[in-house]
Image (cartoon, rainbow, N blue to C red; front, side, top):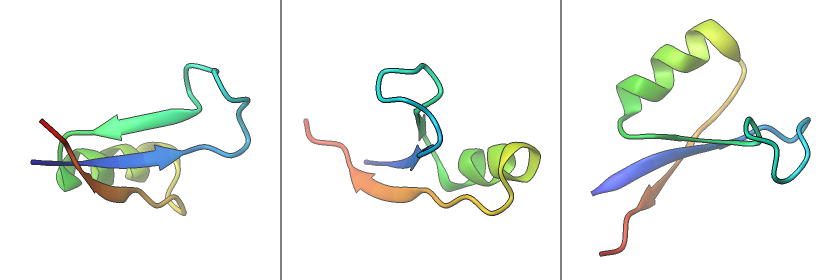
Length: 48
């Protein structure tokens, strides 16, 4: 399983909007279209 992670570098570490984690590529794309069209999320494996 993987997740997609976005870091908003304009926010302070610890701010609730500093990091966004998306369960799917589609969820990330939908959020980006509405909130940060230039943004990028990176895919990471979830360790179990």
